[in-house]
Length: 249
Image (cartoon, rainbow, N blue to C red; front, side, top):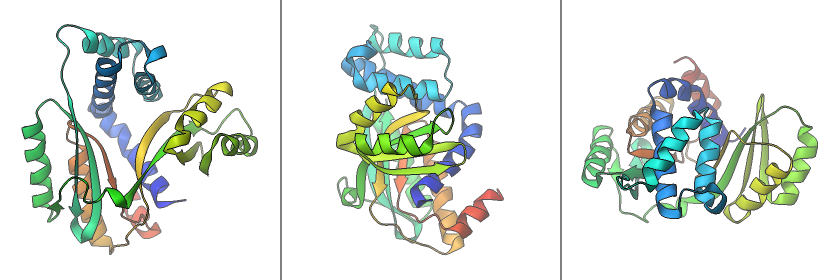
């Protein structure tokens, strides 16, 4: 399993606890709001909104929550969110790329800067680390009701670059240009992804000693726990030793 998939698995496991605190729903609702505000409240004509709704369903968000978020976005009292990013280095020289949706940029800047300072990282300038990450489409689906071998062939035809089976889940990776093709093919096959998203995948990873790696992950968790943060990407290599250590927590 790739380092990226290992990290995704770890995030899914801890995501159950996050959901209880409303963290996952908060992030998805923000994405729905900004998608509807920018492209309108009709998912049939708004690809970004359609994707956000798809992810909301994958997270088992109630239908009324989704509808409420759309109405909130297109109403007269619609909230205004700013999309912004941060780039920098975590402990051990690990590259970190942060995506945010915030209604108060000063608050978000202060929070992110404080996290970097607390854990001995360095906040850089925008664009300084983007070359270390490639934008990829990532689909997560349940491994049930179909032949994985046949599905893999269908996904290759649609443009997938990687097809990983991990127990009850399958992760499909594709180039950003093929995101729509893969999504349409899954729809044609009657397969609804648990998640369909664009991610920044590191083109190279870095291995650290166990203690430094755990410090990096504590830093990442602190940043992710901020309601203004949508996604945190990094190039830390998820070694077997690190994965075993995290499983104890």
